[in-house]
Image 1 (tube, helix red, strand yellow):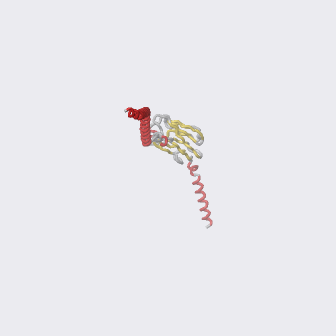
Image 2: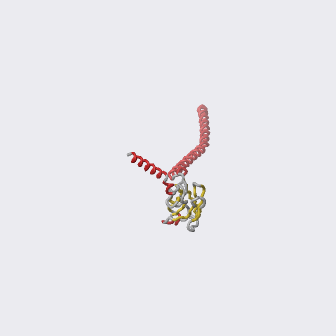
Image 3: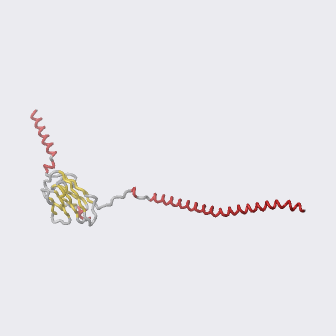
Length: 211
């Protein structure tokens, strides 16, 4: 019985060690690729590949090529140099550091560069070593910085109301200004008329006395 328990213990221990070191056993470093925000036809674009662990088989860059993946850049196991694969042109592999490789697409092509891109160690790879390359799409502008159509309509209505009020106030001021001289004239005429009436009342008894 003790023999069986010891056998199970060592078997489990070996299994755990194997699972913890799968990448090492397979000869695969863990890689993560970034396709950025997509490519613009005819323009250059640089992809980034982050590497964790020891490179055993060499980093490979593969493009989708319209449905059939193919290696375009192959780096050596020592992680010191990257060369085009199979005479491919238009691509440059750069070893930025032991933990980062870059690939530059000199002239982005819709036919061969759109689709899945892969950066992996060896023929199998480990980690999220692929990304989907698309055409570049400009980011959506900040909605807060835009004036909506409804806001423009409201502003136009407010401006229209202000114009109407301004015209009305100006017209009232104009009318009041025109009336003021006339009112003063009427007052003067009224005072004159009152003076005439008073003189008439004074002269009337004198006339009656003469008769």
